[in-house]
Amino acid sequence: MIQITMDGKISDDEIPDFALISTRLDEISTASDVLRLWIEKTIQVNKLNGSLFYEEVNKLKK
Image 1 (cartoon, rainbow, N blue to C red):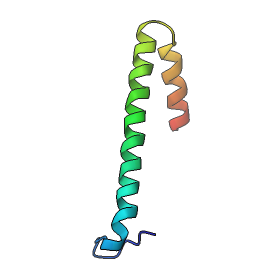
Image 2 (image 1 turned 90 degrees about the horizontal axis):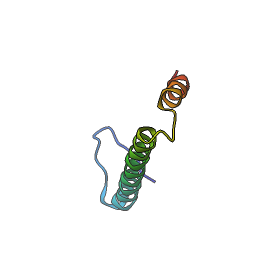
Image 3 (image 1 turned 90 degrees about the vertical axis):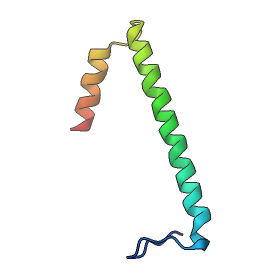
């Protein structure tokens, strides 16, 4: 388990967990980017109502 100390250092024994978390976050970021591109392409070819989609997204963000 990673324990963040007041100095912000990550000890050597915590590095494997930190590396795993970092790798997983990169994977999530990549998946998010791919989804965003797919949404934009789908809107451009008129297979997704972009206005309605973004209206719903904005509702969820509130």
